[in-house]
Amino acid sequence: MAERLVLLRHARIVADHVGQLIGATDVALDPAGLRQAAEAADRVRRWSPEACYCSPMQRCRQTAAAVTPDLAPSIDRDLREIDFGRWEKRTFSEAAAMEPALVQRWADFDMGFTFPGGENVGEFMGRVRAAAERLVRAQQQTVLVVAHGGVIRTMICHLLGIELRKYLAFDVPYLTMVVIDLFDGRGVLSALWPPERKEDDRG
Image 1 (cartoon, rainbow, N blue to C red):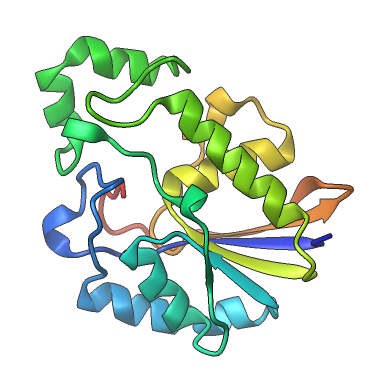
Image 2: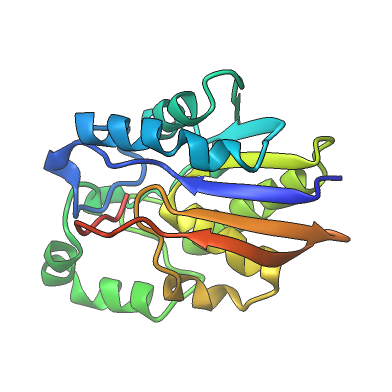
């Protein structure tokens, strides 16, 4: 079983989408994001990951290639961000103005809530928990996971035994790295590196 998970959020996406709800939209990193990811390689390398698991979205694949160029990532579709449906590429404020009652259900963490035209919150949580349990059972001792803000928040709660409705309490800017040491499948937060936050980001 794995002894350590290194959770890394992807780097900054193209500027046109910063501050928008970006889940299923497959956007790339911008030049600044590519530089940020390359600069983060030393910080990731110090943990000596033996395997890398990655969301299939190109923003995560680009980040993984930059931080661990010698470690081919295994793609796991359960590491995708939630699908915001028709709120994709809109800001939170725009979604709240369009459909305030639905946004309130999301804010209240209604596990039965489904983003209009998108994904159900409970199903999203379920697939992320399933991915986390597979990662815990990995053969390698230290596993790097390159994913999205919502995925990392959910994994933190699941592995640390925190109520899932608390997942929005964690701020996970671009290139945040969370190190969780594992003991009998349960986690202890060992390190947290949040880079300087320079912009609002929700993808």
